[in-house]
Image (cartoon, rainbow, N blue to C red; front, side):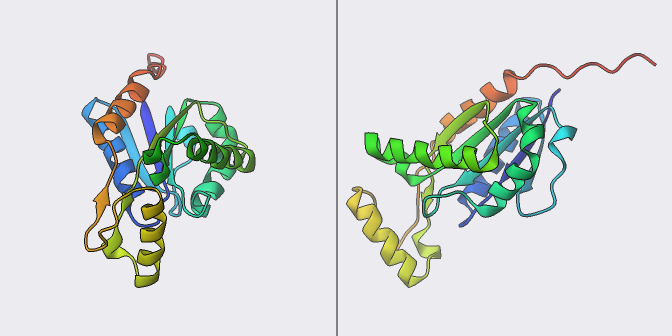
Length: 185
């Protein structure tokens, strides 16, 4: 069974939940997956057969901890199957300009880190209004209102298509080559 490292960066906790769902799905399909936050000591990618990195977009960029981790391991990531999961509310808009903007954010990330993932998955995130301070709640409500989204700040909204995310994880895991068998002793 292939060993897969799942590394994530999160701001409000939703991307950690996304990365956890990916890891759990890989476990359920017989994979050996380890989950690590990018801002904590993580094993080197060389110890794994594949890597999935997940990060969320905030103010036009991904978490600095993810940028730093990917930049430090770009060469190793380039030598193996490695996917990037981009979590962002903009995915919900289905608007050509927003899609170009999301692609531009990803392109800047690739240019900055030197890593070109073998697969990319855009995933809708969440609006945890009840966890925001009053100013951030107000700002997010205005941004979301312009996009036609949910503005009831008394509750949280989760937009991730969990079934689609699980299908992505299964397809990624099943698409991996079997690890080389150890030579007989």
